[in-house]
Image (cartoon, rainbow, N blue to C red; front, side, top):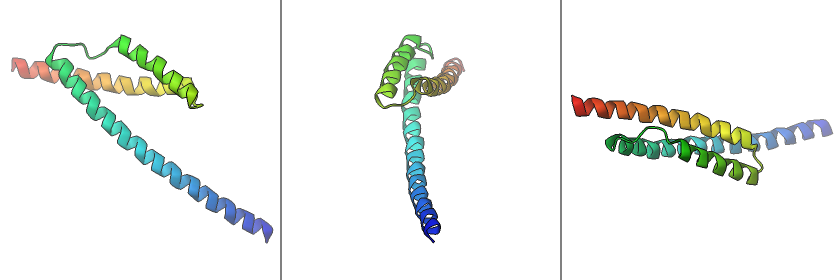
Length: 108
């Protein structure tokens, strides 16, 4: 009987953790969507002014900053850097598409 109660308690606790994880996942998606709305505006601004899609100096500053934030938050800094690099690659891809579209619209 005691084992059954322990198992039921564990399932209840697990359900609570999973609900929190689901909420965090939803917040992450919304935060990423907002981040990409901002970076899209940056891409348009860069394209309008002939600036390059990538900014290696800015990217390095961000890596340094986020690695420190990760350390402060007790998160693996290597993971944080990999995550940022993934996001930045996607942002640059978007900026390249915007620049190409902007160039096409100016010439055509």
